[in-house]
Length: 224
Image (cartoon, rainbow, N blue to C red; front, side):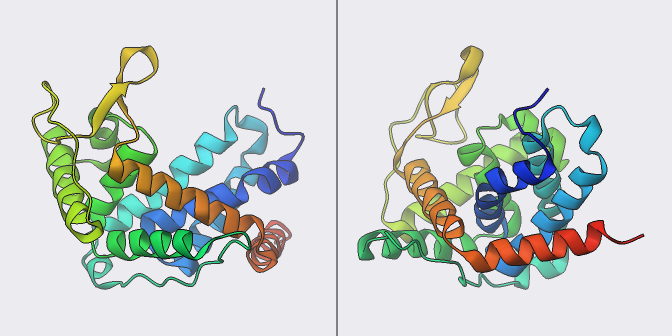
């Protein structure tokens, strides 16, 4: 069984992280909130069957953005940085987080999706390929292009090229669980992780996002 007392406890304990991750994927707070709301509703309908509800919701949100990444209109959607700023955020933290969000918002949607799946979620090339429906080579190529573009936009440089990973220099820095390839705190991954944590802190302290999520969720759950 999972660690949550009930569905409401699950939402309270995970909503900020879910919203932050969704913003990283799509760059638009309204789209992020819609995706998370829909995923929570689906989780509520299947609650008694879920062994790992957080992973299930994360996958549901991720697959929604994967579908949208392949649609022509997604490439014309601009990032909308209407996100809550943490009360304890310093000016430097805010500037850095906004720079990262604006920069990933300039990436094509498929590149941004692959970047987040690999660098933030720690998924392997094969896992990404199977879920997104592209080849392993295409995963590596999209990731390499995304990292190269962001390195320029953010003024970052990659780490040393690691043997055995010809497509993406500087990404693989330490083994993951069970000896699997891992994605460590190189400069770019560190910037992405700090931005995600900054978003989580903002959503934690934002009553508006919590209210909208709860209102929409309860309204949908009360439908006959």
